[in-house]
Structures are given as structure tokens and as C-alpha cells.
Length: 253
Image (cartoon, rainbow, N blue to C red; front, side):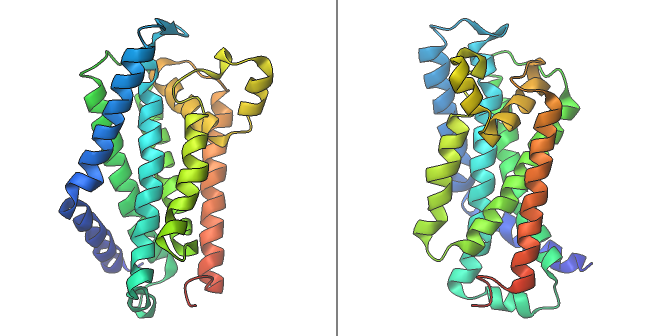
């Protein structure tokens, strides 16, 4: 394992983050804070509790998950797309670095950025509401797995995209609606029975549910299904990346 190459890629990507700190960190944190103010104040004034938890606290895990997913995809996709766009990807491919080291460097940096934002949002939320974390180890595990798996997914999108429009297509038209409809701001038990069944086909439901369980001990689906969903998605992304580098799809052409 070429740890020098991994470190070089990782530090380069992290340095880009701190050069654009307002866009990379401050902007998503402010946007999420606005979500919290709007939903927590406007809707929270009409809903006292959800499953025994105050509405303001109830939406915190959903907001963290929303930011973690979107930022993981954004950072993961842009990190590999930009070298393709400017042509420096060929320097990376011609260097004595295998695809595992490339993935660890780019995906590790993207997951780290998303994790930083998630932690900052969690700290910020404490200024608005009282938050308890009943299962801190489970919370950390879910957040890490979510950042990692969606950074891998973003990496795939970055390789697939041929232009900046395609780079934003999947996150805007597919991922963001799934997150909003995945119980981020409500419990699916509040929906009519028919819609509850439909919602269970949304994979984000399992991530939000498991993450919320780590905070309050309440969940819309069984914890085992949440763990299985995130692990299966991670394995699927890893398999797709292995196939991409094995065949050179959208990289060598």
C-alpha cells in the first residue's frame, strides 16, 4: 500500500476545502441552520412532540443526515470529476498508484469533509434545543458509514458525469427528494398506511431511522434493517468502483 500517495491525494483535497472554507463548510452549515429555524420554529410551534421527543430535537438527526449525504456526494463527485475535466487524472493513473489508493485518498477526503460538517451541525443544534444521544457509538458508526458510502456514490457520479450539468443531475433530481421524503422532518408513522408502505421502498428511510434511533431510541424501522441497508449500499458502491477501474469505463476515454 502506497501510503505516501494516499496522503498526498488526501491532503490535496483537504487543502482545497480550507481554501474555499466559506463555500465548503460555512455555507452548508448556514443553510442547515436555516432549515432548523424554519422547520423548528414554524412547524415546531404546531407540533409539540413526535414519539415522545420535542419536534425541534426530533429533526436534528434528519438535518445532520441531509447535510452528510448531500455533502458526501458533492465532495466525492467533484473531487474526481475536476481532475478529469482539466486532464490531470492521467497523471494520477500513470503514477505508481493502484485504484484502491486513489479511492482511499479521494473518498477519504470527501467523507472527512462531510463528517466535519455533520459534527459542526450537531454542535450548532445544541444552541437551539436540548439534544440527548442515547447510543453515541451507534451514532458515530451510522454517521461514518453514511459519509463513507455516499462519498463512494459521489465518486461514481464524478466518473460517470461528462459535464457539470450531469454532475448535479443525480443529487438534485434523485438524492435530495429521497432525503426529504425519507423521514428527515417527520416520522413515517404519521403517514397514512398506504404511504407508509410506499415510503419503505425509499432507502434513505432506513438511514435516517437508524441514525435517529442512536439519538432517542426511537425508530421507524428495525435497527437491523438500517444496518443492513447501509452496509449493502456500501458494498454495492465498492463493487461498482472495482468494475469501473477494471474496465476503464469513463476514465480512459
